[in-house]
Length: 129
Image (tube, rainbow, N blue to C red; front, side):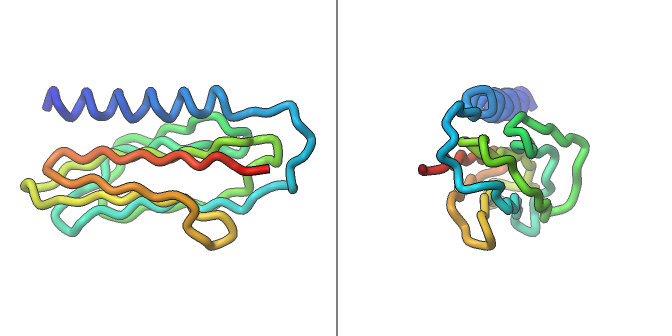
């Protein structure tokens, strides 16, 4: 359980740091972005928490989740340059998997996968100008 808590804290810190540095003063952005966050765990795992960028690029934390699929869609402000997603899950054994994906306009732009019993996956997408 201590290992899981450390993974959760590491994931949270990573997402918070990327959110803090996500704003830009440049006006070269192409406008708001349609973002979808997807988290998928194997059938023997349950998602416990998710941290993702909100429309302003700040971190939103969701806890006490359950099930093996989670997703949300939102329109992120044009000045947000870094979009991040992190999730934690626990599997019944070491064969568990967890995948996090960031989609922009329906296209996967970043993803990451974790495997094991105590699962933590994060990914960060930096918008190119």
